[in-house]
Length: 97
Image (cartoon, rainbow, N blue to C red):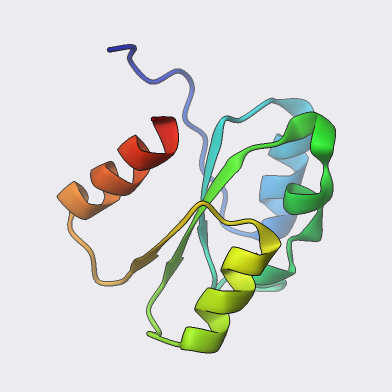
């Protein structure tokens, strides 16, 4: 299996958007609760068809409405905090398959 390429991290949607404009990402792992704009409000990541990435949402709230809006936006998967590394890797593997 192929190894991972570049991994970048950002502390806010604004910072992440700057990275997304400058690089192509196959996968974005996105926390819903972020300072400033929430992950669900990051429309550019979902609407930019030229730079389409899979998105896995992370959330600490088992909120069905939030889950539904995330999936409607086009999220590939959804993981609930607290999660362990294995759950995260399973979600990533599902996306990559």
